[in-house]
Image (tube, rainbow over all chains, first blue to last red; front, top):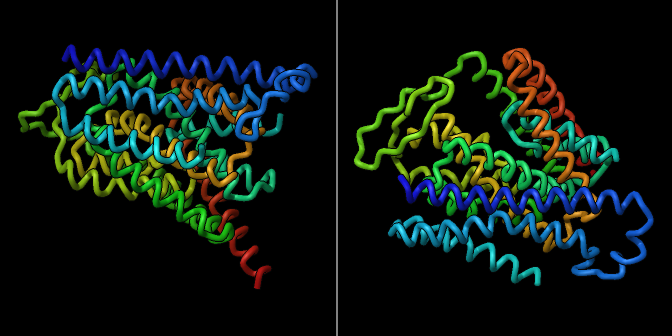
Amino acid sequence: MNKNNKLENLTLTVIKTILILVIALTIISVILEISFSQDIWLDSLRIAGMNLLDFVIIFLLFMIPVSRLSIMIREFSKSKNHINAVSEVVVLGIILVLVARII
Amino acid sequence: MYILSTSFIAGIIGSLLGLGGGIILVPALTILFDLPIHQAIGVSFIGVLVNSSSSSIVYIKNRITDLRLSSILELGAVTGSIIGAYTALQIDSSILSVIFGIVLGYIAINMYVKSRKNSENNNIESKSNDERKYFDESTNEIITYSVKREKEGTIISVIGGIFSGLLGLGGGAIFVPIMNRIMNIPIKVAIATSSFMIGVTSLVGALIFFNNGLIDVTLVSPIILGIFFGAQIGSRINKVIDKQILTNIFCIVLIYIALRMIINGLEIEVLNL
């Protein structure tokens, strides 16, 4: 039960932290979009066809499932739930392959 | 600003009906903003990902989500999501619109029938060594259950994944009945676990659509904010509103949207001929 609680707490903390960060950055992005300042410095830094702030937002959003998968793999391995750990490793592997195709 | 308010409304309705934002967002973007359906599905994955993360926080906090079960079902769901997303890329937008309309119609009718009968499997028997528990706040009871037919559930979850990847929906309308009816999972745990899982299936769909240039980055920020705050408001309205009347009204709205999607798809097909 304690091991389950630890896994839940860790997963909860990670999802919450990243989501708060995503929402905060998105609010900043929308404010900047309305104002003129975005054109001056953010648009000069472009990654994968988008400005730096949009890239960071999408990257962080995509990191939510990736981070929680990594935590679950670690915790399942520790608690010797090998089937669960292997299943999550395969899912994470698929996601990393899809990311690699974009890069 | 229009996209922000549309996704805000989509977030509220999705949260009220427990279906996620995609079910309203995709038709709204195609019908109201004339966005090609492939692009609407692409940005819908982002909305579903935000919705999943936001609702997972609440469900994990209340210790309803079955993380072990999700890890098993995710494998089938992700496989299905890849099949669905690549199929969507090959399908013509008119056919995709018709498929979306049919699935939406099915979900609306299913939701209406369920709200009348309230026929979920709540008589969960637990006769296994692998007993799992959760605390049900509404009854103040600790509910014990055990997972049955894990292999079958994993295989069938591929279907949920296919619909998720194909149409940019969460897939909860398929995952929840699979878990509840086939795997003997209490309905609340099924909903919470499904919400948690669809984060991964929508990420897979988003990556495939992103790789094919079908996610318009300028729409991402308003959709994230709209869906997030809409879902927060929706979950609060949910506590004070009569669910039966609400479900009936939205069933009619969903059936209308479904018909519009089917007609739109068929009209394009007729024009092409």
